[in-house]
Image (tube, rainbow, N blue to C red; front, side, top):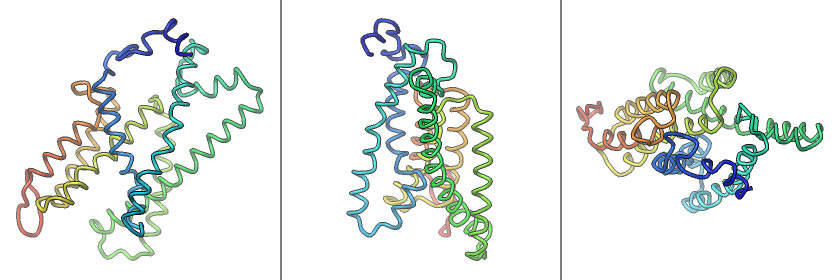
Length: 263
């Protein structure tokens, strides 16, 4: 496959190759951002609060990334589609199109069903955890301190529906590839990392400062990702925002003893 690809499409095996701005700096920054963001996803982050000991966290840190050994299989599918499906317009359909061309119709149903089941399981975890964190850790402490646990549960259920509808609408009306959507997610959750690290090592970091930097970083990362894959000096979106947050969180000083923030 690689020999045939190097002969037919050599630009697909070089950087930036077939693209114009996705070079080495974009690749390295994307790897670093994904490595940091992996542990910031809501299910992984929330699970750390229920660990019995530090040894459990260390064991999970070793075992959890092992699923990524399946990633080369995705690369093989994409590279094969370059040769087998030269006229394919939507790269998101590479696997299903190759399966439809290669295997019987019933096997395409098996692949589609397995993909749908996998997406539903991971989406359910993300939706439940995200809705619960929003209701319990964001809405109640900031907007409604007197909210009861029962009201928090009701709000979390409503947020599951809101997030689901929003995700479906974005999936239907967005033309972005699965890869760009995944990098957008990593660019968003990685903005939590600077505040988390600096909050553990410095007393100068305040909750309001971290919140402002987090909201700004997510907004800017989303804007830059949706308007271009490599918006600033070739680095992936969200990477330089995370670096800025390190400077902002560490350089800010509390305005008074009770909290507050100024840069």
